[in-house]
Amino acid sequence: MRLFRLLHHWLVPHEANNHRAKALHHEALFAYVLLLAVFNLGIRYFHGKMPDVLGYATDIRVEQLVAATNAKRAEYGLSPVSLNGALSAAAAAKAADMFANNYWAHNSPGGKTPWDFIIGAGYRYTLAGENLAKNFQTSDGVVEAWMNSETHRANIVKGGYKEVGFAVVNGVLNGEETTLVVQMFGTTSAPIAQIPKAEAAGPAPTVAPTTAPVVEEVVPEPVALVPAEPAAVNTTPAPAPAANFGSGFSFERVVSVPKINISTLTSNVALVVVGLLIGLLAVDAFVIRKKRVVRLAGHNIAHILFLITMVISGLGIVRGSLL
Amino acid sequence: MKQQDLLNAIILICILGGGLFTFWTASGNIPLQLVIGGITTVAYVVWGIVHHILSGDFHRKVVIEYVLVGLIALVLLATLAV
Image 1 (cartoon, rainbow over the protein chains, first blue to last red):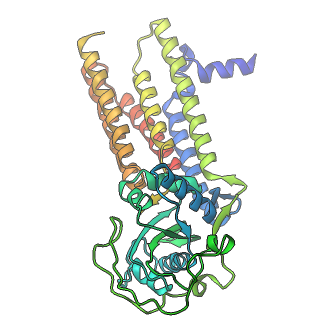
Image 2 (image 1 turned 135 degrees about the vertical axis):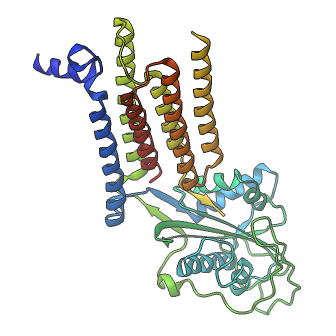
Image 3 (image 1 turned 60 degrees about the vertical axis):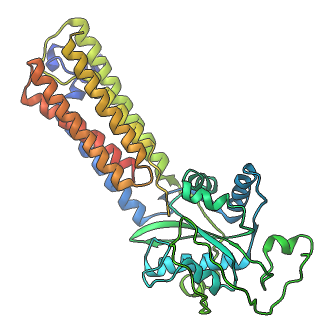
């Protein structure tokens, strides 16, 4: 009975609580703000201290990225691109350089272009392009985001590309733990030294690979995502990714399964908090209307609409970004 | 519903709908989205104040309530953006 009275006092407007549920009084609303702020800061703190316990569930793998890319190309009636070792090495070198020099751009602060990494990896291209993505959680999420961007989609569904390389790697960029995905497309008119992984496992290539240097006019076609400045042939090898990540480091996947997924936790907390508030406001509005009580208070229906709008906005936030 | 109430409701829907649409167009840019969330919140609080002034039941308590509800929404948004 006492519990019932307590709940009634906190949840239902009546004379004793000044015709406003105690849980909607200013003190209570202020307490919610403080609790949510502490929760917010707590997540940031513990994520920094214990990312394995409280972190972002991530599962991005090169084989899935290749499959998803080719599935999109197939939808446009295009032939698949094959995974190329040299392009993947270029992508890994680019990712390593981005972490080492702390930048999120197609060109490095030192002026190094994507073409420099491709050529440095030994890939003599006639057509090349680069897509970048960071902080997505799944392979499909990355490719879908690229497809939703006109300029990135243009790379994925470009008929001229024959090969692709990927690097997927975790690191710290601008002080933030970042999962970086580098996708490099290319076409070369002559066979190159590296045998693409897909071909290595399959039937013998119709043209025998050669280790002889390819004397080829390099015609870089600047794609929408990269600077328009034509690339000069640069024979300086790209920095080895191992220099920054260690020799045994893999650039082929980032799979992270923390005990608590931050995205799930924050979404659930937001839904519970907003759900409770909306319930309280709805009960309050109903009782006050039924009893025809005149009081000084905000507009409950407006509060409900506002909270719904903000939580829909928040749930639609995509952490990942493209370049 | 009085004509003034209808106008207030339409303005509120425009504020919230406009905020939601602008938020969506800024997808991929979280700092900008948080700024848009902040602007939407300020617009909502101003709407609440004007609404109660026009209704003749304006009071400091009402302003505090709108500000607190706005803060709850903003902190929630910032939490969802972590």
